[in-house]
Length: 260
Image (tube, rainbow, N blue to C red; front, top):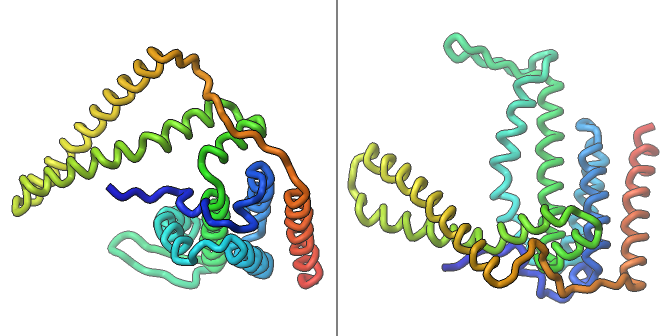
């Protein structure tokens, strides 16, 4: 079956793909922190961040449609989270809607905060897509271990990424079997079959996990993952790091200057 790997474009030769993974992690993590700390009403700062992401996207040479597809996958979760902010912020109402005994009121402050959370969420997703799409996943895990991230976390991420595609294959096989047996059945039968399918998938995943663990123990697994990747920061990495920091500092200074 066809799978959508998060590092399927990491083979593209570009400036970002040639950088040390540790440098990219530090740069994009700092970028994510600044995006999260931006004030919701600070539209200029978010626009500057979006322009910088657009420049990095062009440098990465990754097709634009890839970023659109990845963002659309996460967009419903961002929207669902932002709706709570939209409805819970008190203030002067700009829109009121009566639904039976329930009255929905949207304030101006809530609307501004909603827009800020949505824009921040999309920008953060684009940053993560840039990081993962330009770095092979094994190198990304090795770089995280090199940055002293707990080995347990990197090991969990490694196993999750390695075996989630097997679980996806099992789910697709069960789905096709269910559709072939209940093609024209009533909805209640389909829902019952779907619940049974989820239970079977959980049991098969648990059994596969036990089998894999026993197989690893029989081959001498002692709880450590041996990495073959060695990193060395080169001149271009330092140049990119300094330029990245200069751009972020320049955005902050420019935003403060225009805000006066």
